[in-house]
Length: 294
Image (tube, rainbow, N blue to C red):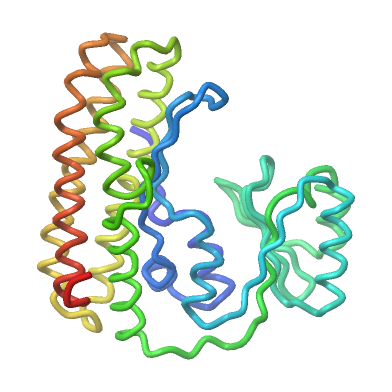
């Protein structure tokens, strides 16, 4: 059984930098999501993700911090962009999407280097010398820092409703509840591709490692803020069903990968559809509790 990460790596780093609890950073950033991807250029060819894209920017904007995004694909361009941002005295810089360093930040000339397993702090010039080759390619988020002062009850309720809206409102086959429904339809066609067992095995490990695709994390965060949210026990009860279904899906994916039996893919379709319905019920309950409907 793989070791479970309680909170996603970007959430843990942002919580440290912004002096928040991981639960506050997770809920305020509207972090819980679902994305389904497929394509011959992907390895494995089918992928899922439970963390919202551009989480860092969404969290900063939710907290009232100005956040500017800069995407660079070449080292020379990235270095020029970085030097310009530092000349503006941007006190916080995030670099995301890096193959070697999944996430690092620059704060008061100290680089915080976060990999999937470690977190280190180094003087900025040491990081420049050590990780030069890939350091400047990726996505930069320059944040105009100011102390975070918010009324957490109102902010978290608003963020939860917005998170529910993201999951429930159709934005394409690949996203939210619609993405899970599309996955349930697409999974029976996996057998047409040679690497489908790798997809199943990778997804199973990911669900287990990432706290049931961060649904268990969401439950823990709701429980931690029960005093300011109210009605969270009712929500956690609905989320428990979602977590149970994610656990079941992980087990079925592992079995499909181990047996390489195409019929195991057919058997996955209905449980995935039931998972989509459970997710829909949970997020609808969020809206009913805090948002008076969408």
